[in-house]
Image 1 (cartoon, helix red, strand yellow):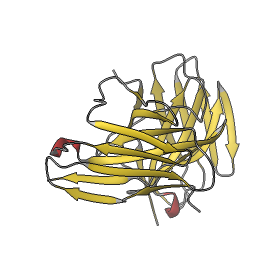
Image 2: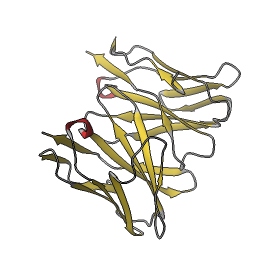
Image 3: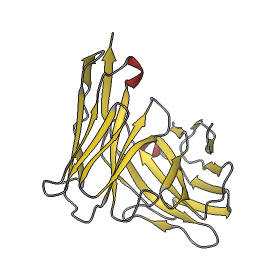
Length: 114
Length: 112
């Protein structure tokens, strides 16, 4: 069964609103989680590394004030897209390392901004 | 130039064919090479990984890494319709549980 869940699986919102996406590790603790974004016919691009108990680390070109990440507990990381615009429409996927050599991906959240 | 290049396909093959999927990369720091399978609107799932150069076999799947050429391959023998998916290569300098750099993915269709 799934070991990393995401909620919601799909969200449609109006331009200018904020959207929160949750990523949970179901039966293990994850001090680190990764957030990726995937545009149609493009690769998964790492947006940021979420760290429990400290600030997230953002990749170059990713606006930290627009994509707020909070690693609230050892099993939960949230990504909030603030003031979303149509160009933010994408497939957002999180992943969580379970051991030194294992990483599980969530099922993804499809965000559509109208 | 992207760090990882992968032909997006689509690639259509008949059932039973041998499939060859490939990626090239430019970052010589990559040491871990992974192949993920992704079904439509789902998260990727790891098929197999290889450390440094060499071959690795798992059932019908064989992964090859040639670091001198910065070229990796995934071979699927006796392909089945259930293999129809998008296959993504991914790489990391530090490990399979670290942040990854992905290719665009190759969409594979295995027909009856």
